[in-house]
Amino acid sequence: MDCDLCGGCLKGLNKEQMGRLSKSAVRVSFKPGEIILKQGALASHIIHLVRGYARFYLETGDGKNLIVKILKPHEFAGITSLYANKQYSFSLASLGETQVCLFEKSVFLSLIQENNVFSNVINQWYCESHQQVLGKLKIFGSRQLHGRVADSLLYLADEVFHSDRFNLMLSRKEFAELAGTSKEGLIRILSEMRNDKIINLNDREVEIIKRDLLERIRQIG
Amino acid sequence: MDCDLCGGCLKGLNKEQMGRLSKSAVRVSFKPGEIILKQGALASHIIHLVRGYARFYLETGDGKNLIVKILKPHEFAGITSLYANKQYSFSLASLGETQVCLFEKSVFLSLIQENNVFSNVINQWYCESHQQVLGKLKIFGSRQLHGRVADSLLYLADEVFHSDRFNLMLSRKEFAELAGTSKEGLIRILSEMRNDKIINLNDREVEIIKRDLLERIRQIG
DNA sequence: CGCGAGCTTGACGTTGTTCAACTAGAGTGG
DNA sequence: CCACTCTAGTTGAACAACGTCAAGCTCGCG
Image (tube, rainbow over all chains, first blue to last red; front, side):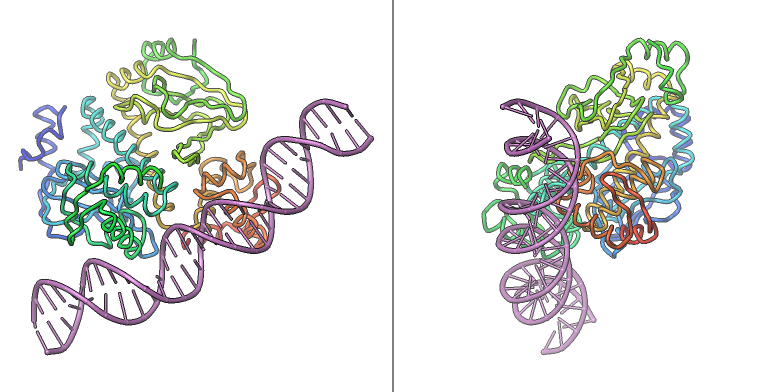
């Protein structure tokens, strides 16, 4: 199987290595809401999101979830389980229709070990991912609801959809899990923001109207 | 300058590379409470903690801090600023007397790029560090005070001091910043735990008595 | 038409922060 | 040697923030 859709995401590999990886790869499609990787399962694969979006979340143990980030096309997941972890420490579920490429972890790992350019690509990935999580931790540890919701809205606009107008692919409950609160708490803040004309909100269509204000709310909390 | 105290932390480097790194290295001592790296400053160095402990924290912008982890001897900081970030995204302050080794970021980076074994060591470091932050995010996003304090206590016992009896090197305020709450809130929980004989607490001397119970509190919140 | 799922709002109780007062110990200067 | 002051720690009370519970609403579907 070839993996042309993976595009430049695997740069640094030579033809032989690319072939070895492709041979171990499987392409799979998922319907909306299906679980792609399950927390606790044996970490056997690295996944590459080819098409669609997916929510990367932690099962907190008390029946709730915490969405850490939204994966968009050409992003990876499972790299955090490359070393040490025998099991996935997170879950991944599709939003809408998605298509993913599954690479065997062992092959992926040996490529990192033998190809320095590739190893550096992964390094860089870690660096960015680490930063993002640290940022989220900061928000969670220091801001209250208004700030966390504002942050989540801006995260979606800036990092995921690259537009101030987008279709929130999440249910209210899922959006709450992204902002780290309850469904009702989130809804109240959103309603408030709509009343204050900071955002437009029709069902799952979101438009950021007063971005400067939203950014201020994120900062002061 | 040689860097024998860095021990096996820089494994994978050959003699020439080790020499190049050593030549760029500076050894510095810090008194209790002094700032080693300052959030926002130009990220010019990677630091290696040779002796003592340090708190790795984020300045949240509203005058509060959030302690992400406690660095112990032979750990690194600043690796998260290797790529992209021109400025440190965190601060590092000494707890007690510490001694650190400063490496020039540019030299460090070129070693990663040319030495695959070293690159993999860093990769692994990222992987572990990433996991730790994700774990903390999970706690912050899903547990309330009791759980967060229990988690912080167990973190110190298991990951930092490797003993159920240790000298908390943090003030109450700093410990609160580790647990993500206010000084008063933390004190109340600690008093409760002392009254319930879950921990012993004399000034900054901590002893975990009922570990099983503490672990349960961490899990159920 | 009835049913269920997702969304919304109000009421209420819990949790946690803030403010203020108090204590103990350490350091300072008369 | 004793006020005085400063800091860290502790506790109580008032208040705000947030989660939970319950009810109603809309919409799509059988």
